[in-house]
Image (cartoon, rainbow, N blue to C red; front, side, top):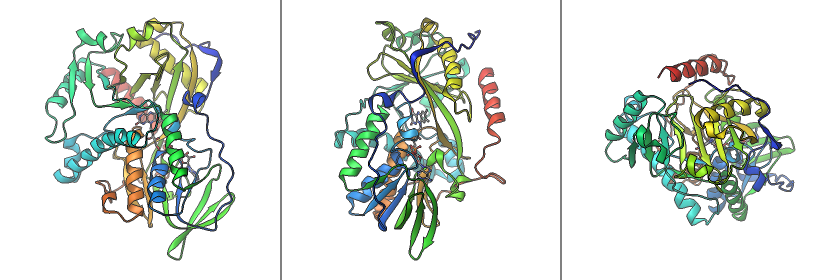
Amino acid sequence: MSRPAMRQDIFTDDFKTAPYWWDEVPRPTLPEIALPERVDVAIVGSGYTGLHAALQTARGGRDTLVFDAEDAGWGCSTRNGGQISVSIKPGYDELVRRHGTERGHAILKEGHESLAFMGAFVAAEAIDCDFSVCGRFHAAHSPRQYELLGQRITSQPKGLETPAEMVPRAEQRRELGTDAYFGGAVYTRHAVINPGRYHQGLLERVTAAGARVAARTPVTGIERDGDGYRVTTARGRVRARDIVIATNGYTGAITPWLRRRVIPIGSYVIATEELPDGLMDRLMPRNRIVSDTRKVVYYYRPSPDRRRILFGGRVSFSETDPRVSGPKLHAELLRLFPELAGTRVSHSWCGFVAYTFDELMHAGRHDGMYYAMGYCGAGVGMASYLGMRLGQQVLGLAEGRTAFDDLPFPTRPFYSGNPWFLAPSVLYYRWRDSWA
Ligand SMILES: Cc1cc2nc3c(=O)[nH]c(=O)nc-3n(C[C@H](O)[C@H](O)[C@H](O)COP(=O)(O)OP(=O)(O)OC[C@H]3O[C@@H](n4cnc5c(N)ncnc54)[C@H](O)[C@@H]3O)c2cc1C
């Protein structure tokens, strides 16, 4: 199939290089708080990981202070596509080979629990964030991938089955208005959320529980200080008994051990302008979230009001200009849905996710500091869940334990946080996808 030429005149007059979600829920301008001399728990990062940890520790009676270098929720947690799945990339056989049957099973089980946790959490907290168990259409980008999808579904490990049904190419249009795929699978339990409203609801519960949030306060150093830590920020110092690092794709020099273990990769999304009446019902009739079997994946969904398509992918690895990534995504969107020719882009944005060398998220302690990160691009459910578990660990609760605790967190020789190898890797995977 030939690719349409990439065009620069695709942006609407009111085009924004900020996430679509920020139109409805702008980044909160929290008042600048005076930094206390001492707290029980200091948390670095105010995304889902940091806020879920804070919710637990604040409700558990610990004086909790959350720092963010930018406005609250500025990172991936208000930039994502809102797709929620089981989140674990390696398959069962691979996990068992690496970690043994019991641990491999337990890791996948955590994935299932993170998905269930999301629905239970937003219901229990009554967070109004368009959460819905809409199901995912996972599209096969080649006949071979369709076959593999079928095999994976029929050979799911006992006790870890995910309800799924195959959709052959001949019936694909009941799921998606395109012939560009070779059929796919519907995972009925996968869910969707409005990430901006979800983050805002979470932030409100965290502050209501008594935690403080120091926005626009970069942490520049953390040192041991007796049986606690001294946290240095651009606005002064705070002593803390416990530290939680929740910086994921923005992990920097203050935690060099972690920085050597996560690979920051750009992830990009565009929102279309509002579609003409009836078009969404032809293109995405079942209101599902969609992804494909490519290694360099595309993922998309209707906006909660079903007026726009939000289309995301890894068009680059470190591009930070949404005016450059936007046309590339738009071209791919048109390749899938030629009916969208003439539809312009109203928003284009990006954020940095964190990959790991073993494609697994990691949580645990290093130098006594708690951390959870490395969600490999699938952190809406897992960052929420592991953040919650970390908070329980800080409180010393047995239920805070996870299958990820103390899992070896690999790095590579000479890697210090600058992923020079990404360009050739992305090119290689794209080449492999095109041949699959
Ligand atoms: C475009 C895009 C689309 C995505 N789509 C999906 C999706 O559909 N489904 C899915 O499951 N996942 C998706 N993800 C991934 C998901 O959003 C993340 O895995 C998740 O939000 C990570 O949350 P977090 O709290 O760990 O990190 P973040 O939300 O990134 O928060 C980290 C915070 O740490 C702060 N920080 C860093 N260093 C410091 C410092 N020194 N001092 C103070 N603060 C600091 C940063 O400012 C940042 O706000 C997507 C991500 C992107 C970028």
